[in-house]
Length: 406
Image (cartoon, rainbow, N blue to C red):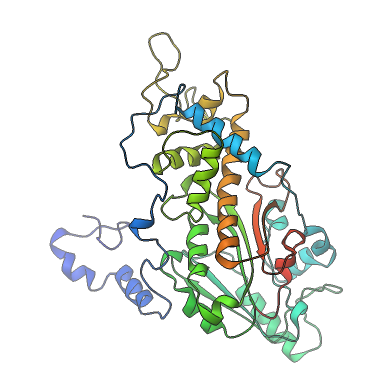
């Protein structure tokens, strides 16, 4: 049978008790639970918080067209997007100055694998020389192990800089050097269970910046809830938040921050049905159309995973859909829908991101919170960034140059 603690391996049924006493997975879990920052489910909202604006009445299966249909929901989402973003979303690409300061040579000199040009453009680094008078601490939280870590190279650079005037790992003319006051650490744990108050207390004083690059789906919301749980002095230390989002298709309404705001905007866009897990799940499904060439087809197949069964007349039925069969391509193929599936997916993504931005504004009282594009869509379609700063300047990258530590 599969091991109760780790289904990736099997055990004999009659050896369950003895196996669990020595299973490596169980030992790792016990070790994790002994950490001071571990609090099981601390960033997962209680069940009473789920679906704050959901209708409790049962729903019939989706229909493609007609009142409160999938097409109606799609039209309402795009209408809500037009109201929330009356003009185009700004592109704030700050990579040019970093490249001119020696970003790529510095990475190569430290033998950091760059991968494709896309990963080079969207990589992040720590430029400790901007805060040479302060002690800079970098704490990284990750659920799984990370390959190609650069921790050793950074530590060597820090050691070298503390013993000489220049680092042999930094190329001539590069401004990317780490001073002896820089340190880093990693926490390997699901964000759902990380009590951020303890983490922040362990980092010491100074301002803090919260940064995440392509934090998958509800991971963004769990991270924000964790930061939102900070109290007192530790909460006041948060000077800026910058989160590049992705994988909206696996978001969860129960974890989503700003879910009430999102439901209100969709209703203002014309939606007259209920708003809850059913509607949000379909909205999330449509976000995948932004990264697919054909949202209703798999490679090598004539019929896509989202295509409905056809009726006796050779066309799609208009009634009785479950949400798994209502792809963005099908909905946007209806003559009364005036936009493409990519446009629908993009609108759905940005509304979810703006809901998060509004939550940050209300929760932290930040003066400047916005959704921007940090690189062009040709680099990556997952190019949105939620950026907020306590004293303005978010649109010009002010959150990336906050005070003494982070």
